[in-house]
Image 1: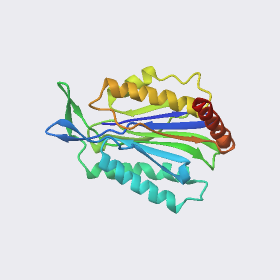
Image 2: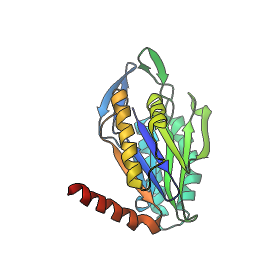
Image 3: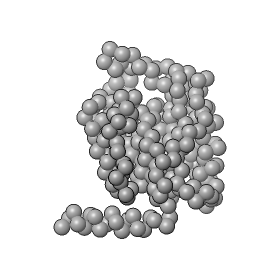
Image 4: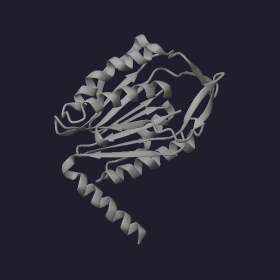
Length: 232
């Protein structure tokens, strides 16, 4: 299935996903990959974008967003450009494919729904870390919620509903001072979700850290020093 988690704080954002991809055969989920990262990066790694739902629809949005970002690579307004363009592309993609496909979760029939999208990173024009979420809340394309939701200073989790609930219950970043502290805690809770719901969550856990430019080197130095201490 899929699980994508973003923790966005004042000076940095951490994006993490599981690697399990599935296909639906006769209403049953069948694993197709354990190394399917749910996010991609643009702007030389300073913006991360991720989707849950249909892998093919996610690939189409990734292609669109990457192409658009390449055309505006040196534009400080890139974050805003993507923010304005994404809703129309989400709506277009969700109309191209059926979103009423169902699968069984135990004895319960669950609607796959459309594609959700999360974007987090450094907005050069506003000189701050931002996080935006667009969600598909209903069964058909006409019910898409394309109103962007601000996820700054929040934990945002999307994907398999029961795993999302576990993440929001278990993940605590109150005592985290660096992105690497947050990264460790998020990876731990995704692993818990994989153990609790192995049919829906699993595979490789991927992480990506984005920080404000003035702290990037400091965070990297802290990471390297911690790695040296662990090695010794």
